[in-house]
Length: 217
View 1 (tube, rainbow, N blue to C red):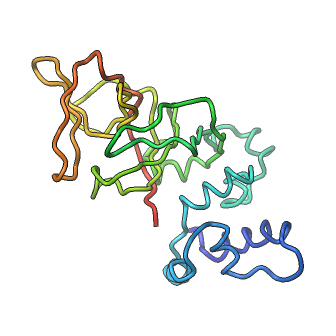
View 2: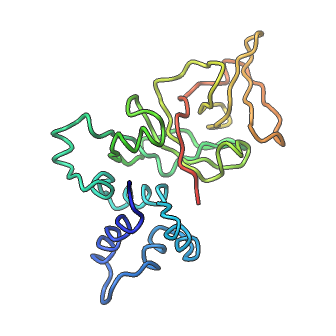
């Protein structure tokens, strides 16, 4: 089992390389991860690792997630490809749970994640996955505002169950999607304060199916 302190000590070593004069403390790690100190202290007490913030930190610093969590060197991972998984992380893209968001672009970071983590988070270590953020609260309580979702781009067929990323003329949306008997497409929010939207098939393109998520703090 991963321990909070083990991961944080590695982060301190990374931060110390760019910090002049002095030891790196928990408050420095909290600041680097953009987590309030009180929240960070609570997470440490509960051994609750802030995966979302660490993923963003690693993407920004171009650090191997596998090294951070499992002491696995990138060269070793390349020699044992079945043990790691590549994900395109679109840090600047937001799939809107409310109003439309930006469409996918070519600006992304490639992150490497151990398949054990992916099976824990998304129930899979296979497929063509991408990671993006959620803006808005229309999918709460299922998906919280600010969370990171993992999208399987190979799954573009609307089925009876599941949450999808849809590209529309108004932008990207993350919704439960249903095709009605008359062919029209319903974009359904889990938050009952938001009414379903109905669009024609020509106005909707399924980007992929959401297979997992990491909640924001």
